[in-house]
Length: 74
Image 1: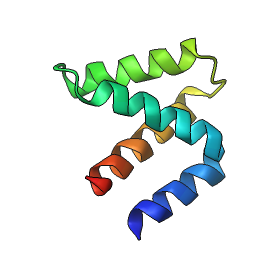
Image 2: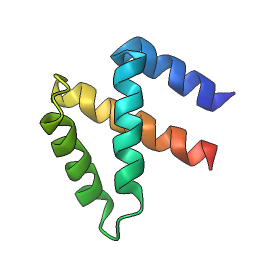
Image 3: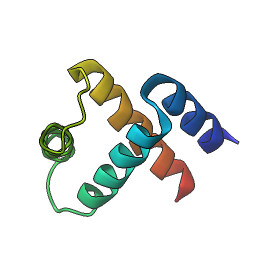
Image 4: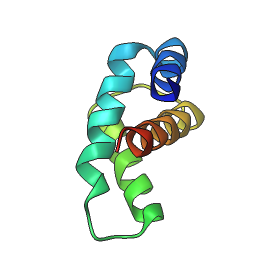
């Protein structure tokens, strides 16, 4: 139930296609053997490179929602 709510909220805030791209990016970085801060920074950098025109605060919200979504799905 909670993953559904996270996905719905993210879809409303960011758009469902944008959240899917953020989620895929977070999944790619999740298994790297680096700190959480380095992962977050890497994800944010990659999102900027692929051209998602998000403000830094919206990108951070998207990343945090994606992380929580993946934790609950595991």
